[in-house]
Amino acid sequence: MKKRTGQSPESIVIVGCGRLGAMLASHLSRSGSRVVVIDRDSSSFDLLEAGFSGFRVTGDAVEHDVLREANLAEADLMLAVTQKDTLNLMVAQVAKVLFEVPHVIARVYEPKREILYRRLDIETISPTSLTSQELLRRVTRKREQP
Amino acid sequence: MRVILVGSGRILYYLARQFIRKEYDVQIIAPTLLEARELSQHVSRPVLAGDATDPKILEGVGAFRADVVLALTPNDEDNLAVCQIAGLMYKVPRTIALVNDPENEEVFHKLNVSVAISATRILSIILEEQAGFEEIGKLISVAEGRVSVAEITLREDSPAAGATIDSLVLPDEALIGGIIREGKVQIPKGGSRLLTADRLILIATDTSMDEAIRELVGENGN
Image (cartoon, rainbow over all chains, first blue to last red):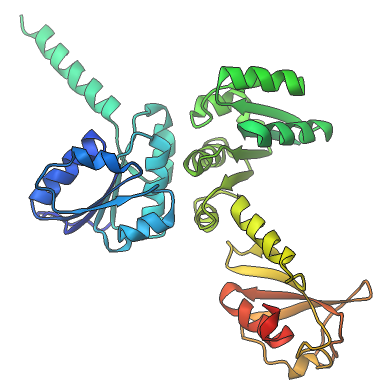
């Protein structure tokens, strides 16, 4: 997999403008990337920072027309962060296979499908696992301190 | 045959009923307890309630032994997940998904779904045929959707009627696979002469199909 290192990717598509998507979009846009954010509900874009200078696309990301409108084929990075695991997985695969996006990451809540994610060779990030690891780390540290 | 049906609503009910009549071993998964209970009463079979994109649920209905999984939910992403879990994790040999966006048919093939069916595409084909283009019937897509097989009927005014196979100028990626005349199938040879009312089985890549049809039945055939 091609990865840009040491510099902010130039062109980023973010699918899902919830709290996480809006935060990522605002941050990446501020740091100089060209950002396109997709959400099926246009009112979600209210969550973006006032200074957001990227593009907003309203539509369902399972439709290729919507992905094309977001110029996905030109993207260096795609982040699939909607509330729905299966949607993130599908969009991530379509981005890799059809639009040949070099770097794709999908957010997934459900650890039960872990084997599937690995089989599909999709890079995933799981808030459930991350939160549990961090909580356990802190709890263990407290316990170890007498 | 062991079939697992995943979905909701009427399509799930009618397919379940049809497969049960055919005495298939049918396992059914519906999304809610209420729907599962109602469907179970209608088809007199147990129906499991649950999210079929959770691998445990598919395992619970014996995915390891299934011959076919049909994913018929209204959401393309869920149908893809169900088929991929079935195919990759439980080695189900045949997975069939319903897709809403016709463009997803091709992608789903690439993503290890055996068959992806777009109701939209099928309906638009039927509609076009009803609208008076019945001399051309698209039969099937093969080779991951890149090649189509179509049935074409020659009319009196079709350029190919009366011509020999040799004399036709078909695109490189198109060929006539068979001639159906008076109910009999003939293998096309160079010297075979095509006649009015012949039905031709045309095999072509999607990029060559239109040109091939124009060559055979003329501009107004399409």
